[in-house]
Image (cartoon, rainbow, N blue to C red; front, top):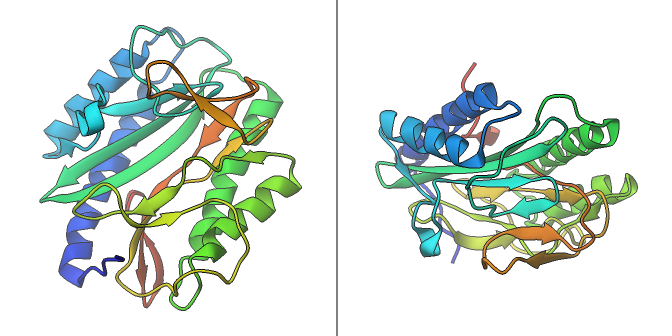
Amino acid sequence: MIILKSRNELEKMWKAGQVVAQVHEWLREALRPGITTRQLDELAETKLRELGAIPSFLGYGGFPGSACISVNEEVVHGIPGDRVLEEGDIVSIDVGGIVDGYHGDAARTWPVGEVSEEAQRLIADTEAALELAIEQARIGNRLSDIGAAVQTYAEARGYGVVRDFVGHGIGRSMHEAPQIPNYGLPGRGPRLKAGMTLAIEPMLNLGTHKVRVLENKWTVVTEDGALSAHYEDTVAITVDGPWILTRLKS
């Protein structure tokens, strides 16, 4: 069931989204060669709590961290630990926070120091795919228009679009209906309505779209070991167009 949010609920989700956005800024500033993924996770949890949020991911389904931190060929759900980030790595960080009972959820992919041109393009193109997807989050469009925008843009540039993991509705629960694939034909699925809140999150790979889950039962990696990037924002559909809740108000 798709849940439509009132203006009051959207305001609460905006507060959660702003916390998540601010935490991402702190993480970006802290990112450097030599830091461990555990240190980044500890920073994420500390800052979430300082801003009055509860980490959405900590303990969710048994997940042991407050942030999902995925490096290079890791697509999503990377478990923070002793891994030391090195010059040339790319790292995707997914952060969720709960404020007043509502979730905000966003992911970013950043370079660690100097990275290859290929990695730079992957990061930039994944972010661009998210922008195109968000542009489709308008009243009257179909749900599949979002994923079709991602697939059309990404596959024209030779990327594999991850199919096994998708975006989702979000609100009082981290995962609500509907699921939002990053692929498919346009013009399918339910009409988008004011009050829908969606976590839109393209995941693009330099190689195949196929992925596998490691033995830890969390970390998802590309099947061929190629680099992957992940961008995500929480978006509300309004009469004024998409309202991106997880970007800092300028």
